[in-house]
Image 1: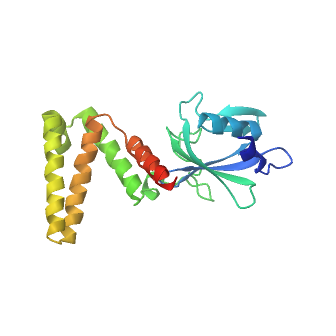
Image 2: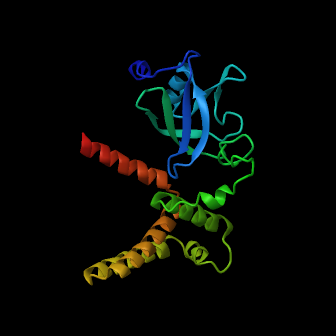
Image 3: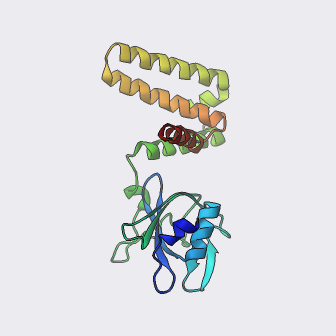
Length: 218
């Protein structure tokens, strides 16, 4: 850890700017400052710690609100005098309750973050799908297909995963790319239903894939 800190160039006040981004959407959540101690705590706990210039003290993001930020990766710029912190946020980043501190345009008008931050990134789309299916499991709205699957239980969900996998294989065998895209989408949907039913998160799947990638690179 000390070797990592030796490469960082803190300013005359012993601080370095830290840009915090959502690891999935790359949305900028906040700009804060770190000193050597808060950076050490961030590296050790894998949650963000900053230095408050107004209060002259360390602060652990989410310590009182619960809106913590799980650190996935920390990057430094080419001069080693600025950091980018990629996180999984567990709630709003801003003390106002906004998802990002950057929720106003330069004239002061509030921006509809829910509209402009709809990501076409596959990971973000899967996250939204997972959250939607979780809400279906929780609320069980009448007439919804997802509600029907949860009511029928695990065996029905497994049967649908198998059916969609078979249909994807058939479409590929027939060299029908349009059908492959449609069947793959159906397969992904039912697979996410299965994950939610079993209480498995997308983060767990992602971590498994990262672990396998790291082993291949060893």
